[in-house]
Length: 352
Ligand SMILES: Nc1nc2c(ncn2[C@@H]2O[C@H](COP(=O)(O)OP(=O)(O)OP(=O)(O)O)[C@@H](O)[C@H]2O)c(=O)[nH]1
Image (tube, rainbow, N blue to C red; front, side):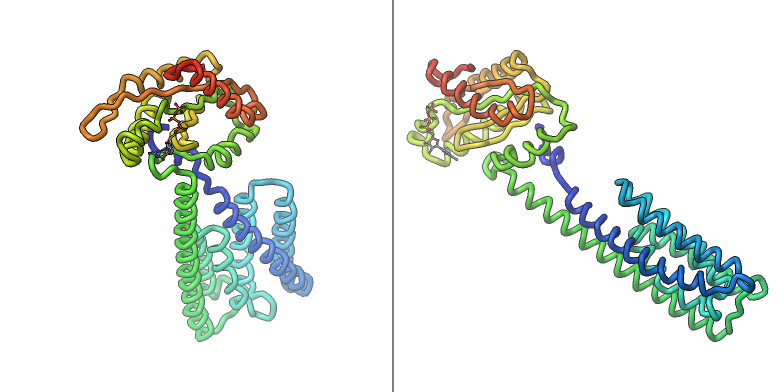
């Protein structure tokens, strides 16, 4: 909690989801369009003259169709992308080896570089494209080893066009990925600003009501019981009245540091109002919560608040309640406010 509280809560999931969605759409488009073409050519390829090609085209179609279908039922999309991506490579080699339909094999290799870049990103996509291209080059340059026969002029034009295709796809994917990263950073920074109190740099009320509330209501949140403690500066109006608003702001900044250094790293301290702070002690039943709150109260009482070459005495009152479930947490801040009111009525500089 003391440093970079935001790192604990930063949410890049929505941006990752957008990227995964894009890959998924490409995968489905590739599967349904590419798979249909494979089936058509698989059926058209005569079994007597080209059984191996027929089997490979139809088998790849079955793999990519069933892979896309199964992906509706599981979350591990990376596995889906890998299976489809890797099944493409031997199929392309087979097309080049046999020459494909009417010896047009080389022309059908052009859509695959971009598919690999989209499914695997620019780095792994480049590695897989190098593997794919090396295999194609080996086959094309070993005419005596393969069934297909390609003319020399056709092969050299093909290499030039295919390499240009890979380079353009690489450039496109690289800059797309870079702009996606930049946009994610920008969005994270905006989220951080929207959830941060500009004066104390602590989380603000918005953070508690949104990001933290989402975390608490998540099934995987296992930090109950928690103690909710509302802290309010005593007679803060007098600080403003006697020393000015800027001096009051300085006190609030120093106070934020004192509170943060008095609680545990796992605890949350937010500025939820003018001179009001909310502390959330995780894995702390009320007894532990009261001990931490007392530590905070004492630390504030014993701290020097240096304003205009003077040391101001500052005290705080704190209201604490325990929450064992997220439903209790929702009610917790209201109940803690009532406890705070009791502490104020009991003479301030105390905890209830
Ligand atoms: N400097 C400064 N003052 C603020 C800020 N937000 C609220 N305040 C002031 O905090 C003071 C709160 O005063 P009150 O609500 O009367 O409470 P109090 O004087 O602290 O008295 P008790 O809470 O009853 O002990 C007001 O003078 C507000 O103007 C802020 O961001 N900066």
